Amino acid sequence: MLSLAGCASTRAPEAPTASDDATLVAMFDEATRAEQVERDPHVPIDRNLALLERAAADRGTGLLAVAASLDALVWRQAFGLERASTLHALAFRVEDATALEARIAKVAASTTSSPWARALAGQAALD
Image 1 (cartoon, helix red, strand yellow):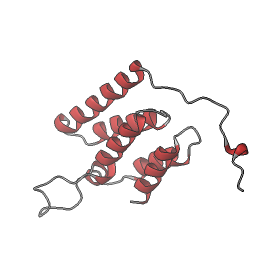
Image 2: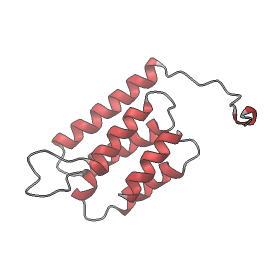
Image 3: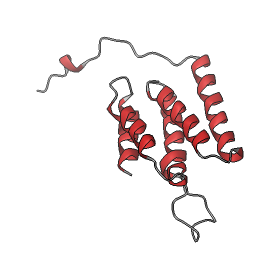
C-alpha cells in the first residue's frame, strides 16, 4: 500500500479575499483597455505582465487571470484576421520580445507561483 502521509501539506490553503479578486479584476480591466486604446504595444504588454506576476502567486482565482494575461501576451487569435496573419498576440506586435519571454519564464520558474501558473507560463515561454 502506498503511503501519502509525507505528501500532505501542513499549511491550510488560503482563501482568496474580495480585495485580491477586485485587484486582479481592476488590473485585467486596465490591461484590456490599454490594448484597445494605446498605440504603443509595450503599454499593454507591461500591464499584462504585471497582472501575470501578481496573479501567479494567488492560489485561488488568480489562475483565471494568469490564463487571461498569457492569452493576451502569447496565444490570442483574433477571428477575422486569419488571412492577414495567424499571430495576433501582443508578443508578435513588437520587434524584440526577449524581455517579455524572460519575464514569463521567471514566473514559470518561481517557487512562489502556483503549480498551474508555473505550467501555463512554462508552456507560454515555449510557444
